[in-house]
Amino acid sequence: MSDTVIVALVSAGASVLTAVTALLLSYRGFASLDARMLALENRVHQGLTDLTGSVNELDKRLIKVEIKLGIQP
Image (cartoon, rainbow, N blue to C red; front, top):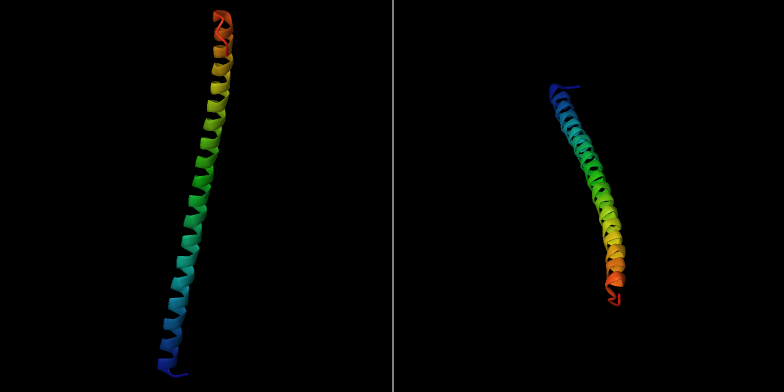
């Protein structure tokens, strides 16, 4: 093989290696982002579940107060 062919192969190989490395790093970045978004989604879900329970408890207590005061719930 001539020198120009070897230089062309090395250049092409470097380009391919750069592209593959970029894809792998992007994949890792998106996987990390996905994990963080899932954790945030779980926290929001838990917060909404807690809030719903608190609202239901307050509603029950308000009904008891209305009954004691003779107000129609």
